[in-house]
Amino acid sequence: MIMSQTAEPMPFRVILKAEREVAFKSPDHLMPWGTKQDNSVNRRFNDKVYKLYPRQEQLKVLDMGCSGGGFVKSCFDEGCLAVGLEGSDFSKRRGRAEWRSIPEYLFTCDVTGKFEIFLEKSGVSELLQFDVVTCWEMMEHIAEADISKVAANVKRHLAPGGIWIMSVSPNVQYFNTQFVRGPKYNGPGSFHLVLSGDKSRLPAIPQERWLRRLHDLWIGSLPQKVLAGTY
Image (cartoon, rainbow, N blue to C red; front, side, top):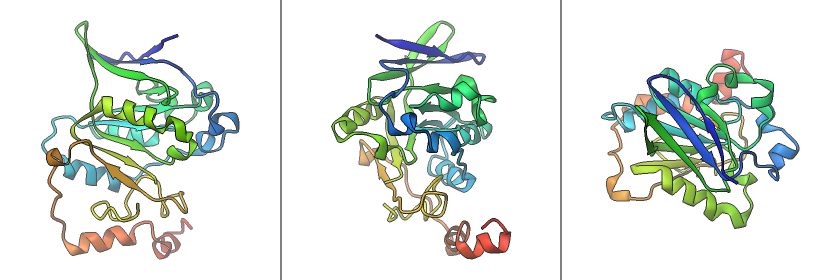
C-alpha cells in the first residue's frame, strides 16, 4: 500500500509518497536511541556545502535518517529547500526538537521501500531532485540486502552533479573533519563517504587558505572543547 504525507508551505508544498511510512523493523525504531536524542547541527559544514555550490539559486538538501531535524532546520533557515526523512515516528509522535517547528519539511519514511518526493506548484507536481543527500549514521541500521534499495532511492532523487554524503571515510579532504556528525561531533568511531553518480558533473572544489584549513581542525577538537567549556 502506498502511503502519502503532505507538507503545505506556501507558495508550494512538498509531497512524500512512500511504500512504508515507518521502518518498523529498524533497530533504532524498536529500541529508540539516536532517533530519541540526536538533533545535530554543524553550520561550518553547511558553509562548506554552500561554497561547493555557489551558483545554486536555492540549494536542495535531503537528509535521510534526520532524527530531530536539526540539520534540516539549519539548512532551511539559511535559504535552502531542505527535507528530512526519519524511519522512526518517535520524534514525530512526541513533537520533539524541530518536528514542532518545521513539520511540513520532516516526514517519516522507511527508506528501504520505494519513496518519491514531489514539489507541487500551482497544481503541477514534479519529482524533487537534490544537490546534496546526507545519511548521518543511518546506514548501519540498514540490512545488507536492503542497501541497494536505499541506493536506488538516492539515485532517483540525486540531481546531476549532486553528492551523497554519509557517516561511514575520514579521508574526504575538502570537508576537513567538519561534518554534521562524526568522530568530533557525537559520532565516535564513524567515518564518512562522499558519493556521486556522475563525476564529470561535480562542482569544482573551492580554494581555501591554509588558515581556514587549520581552523577546521581546531573547531570541535578536544582542546577547543575544553577551552570553550563544552567538554
